[in-house]
Image 1 (cartoon, rainbow, N blue to C red):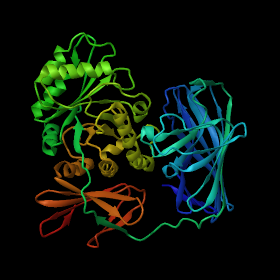
Image 2: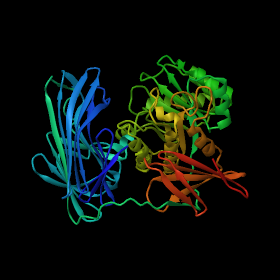
Image 3: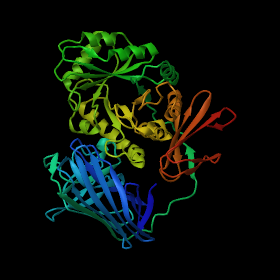
Length: 561
């Protein structure tokens, strides 16, 4: 559980790893976090074992001192963190660490996460030379670092206060984390223009600090609203995407029956077309056809253009293809040659399924490497919720970046002369073959509600979610439904969907799915605290942290489960 602390007009959350989260000045979130991180040469974050040595908390200030030890193959690094908050609205985070053995790393030190509310707003950037540049946080997703050579920021809040963020100990720079679905801008060290990974000798130290200071017209301290969240059902149905699932390697009669009962719009099957024209993974397409489910066929084409496509043509000609996603092996985005190979196979098979291309990595690749293929029906990208952060709240808040991500993807479609239709495939808590233990819990269901609401509001045409079964799936390997399957069953069956609107806060999201027989309301609590909700004055419930509630209203009655 996190602990709420105050420093003058600041209200912050201290999490279990002694990272600061949700730094509010008054009721305005300025930073989503400040933390110390240790990464290896493959950009993997090495978790720390934290021991708190000192905690002093007052009404208008605090001091926390702790030690964090990070151990992994080739990594042995420990650091002491000291966080202080003062009554004059100053917060300081110090990082003082050393390598116990020679190690290779891509990044060690402090990172600051700026809230998305800063997007498009002015900021003064102080560089290491002392020069001050008038700039702004990017409104559109920036493909590359918007700020380089940073030693300080100064910005004016919406309430008129001045906030200064000062960095010491290293040269910092900022990236737009919406490229990876994080709901923040991240300021970090060391600059990516320097060689990486880099070596730290045994005993070599890393000392950094970040000071956040608010001055001027300081607002009153944030006071949480304890009143129930009033919810109302919208009257206008937004664009609701067609929704599919991935087809995992699980082959079990119970899982087969369960996926047939859920009735997704399609199942994604990944195949690889090698340089000789052989298709790898075609047996999964046959299984999807056996289940009677349409196929989203994701074709990764070898970097060396295949000599022939008879096997792919035959696979397509057998039917059951809803649409095709084309990718290029070892390339950030689909090349024109790969798209043409797949288009030729579709034509030879006499198939008119839409051909979509883009990236199977991250929005960053689509943002940095424009598509040049001709005649695409749209663009595609995946979403992985844990590229940078595994924290519950950080994962839940990734959906806040989706509107901007889809706007960026549409811009890339427009630049290529394609229809501005975006397919998101796949959307996962953690990209396969990795899995997340929260997949089996209500957390995944609550996150999925947020995903669907955010992507629907952004106007996404097609969404493919988790694998159907297995560790990262919506079903256990024997077909038993997990909580997320309950949500998806409602979403798959909907003929019309209406938004649920809250009168305050962003803690609750949801939708009403209508069928000829009933209206089903799905609500999700996206926060770490239980929330009381009232729906249109007729229903009141307490939704536990990171959980959902499903309300069913057949004609003439209402019920819940």
